[in-house]
Length: 283
Image 1 (cartoon, rainbow, N blue to C red):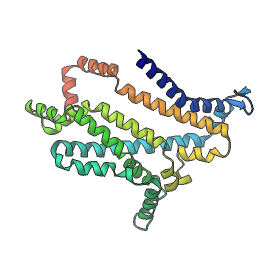
Image 2 (cartoon, rainbow, N blue to C red):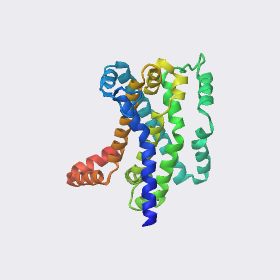
Image 3 (cartoon, one colour):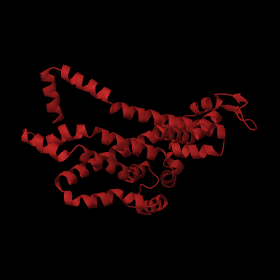
Image 4 (cartoon, rainbow, N blue to C red):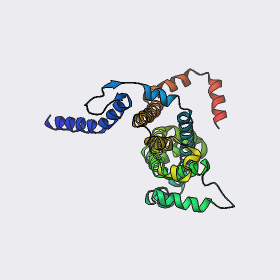
């Protein structure tokens, strides 16, 4: 019991330490006047109204979501294909794949941005300063998170045995991967996607150096508003965290046991002919 109480106390203190700055930001975003008192003297939604009336905010949010979505899908598709192929069929090359996937950890962001600008700002391939360069660099910097999540998921479900069992039942290797391995890797894929999205939403240096104001993302918009109005900046940060929380809840919902049971129940109620047509279309 003493150990349990100690763990509870530590957890509560840690939660307060992590949540307190966010609470302070929320209060400041709702404060009309706050200088010499513990709590604001007056409350207002003026800063949120001002923010939601700014078309630049929604445009920057749309660009950010689009770039992150493309980068995450691209990175997951490439790493998923490479990891499944290497781990299942060429295990002796797994060390090389791991080195390549974890390599972005060893390269500083500023050095990476400068190198990319020098590489792609030429007469032949001139994509420096365009959103195209963000798609590629974002997909690369999240590779360590995506690789670890997918690799751990492969070993957790024991994919080799699953494929062998499916092949014994008459399935081809491609069918075994699509119908058996990938559905059992959903949690690992969603976890990798969540980590990647969280990292990219907080990334600023690369976006600022590579595209700057020419392709204003939410991070750049926040930086530009920082020196204008602290209350408005706090409102942006709260909206920023709210978006991340909603994305997190959505990903958790997709991999919740309740939803998976509902999906299985719907499939069981489908007519056999519809099931067969769905399988043929999936193949």
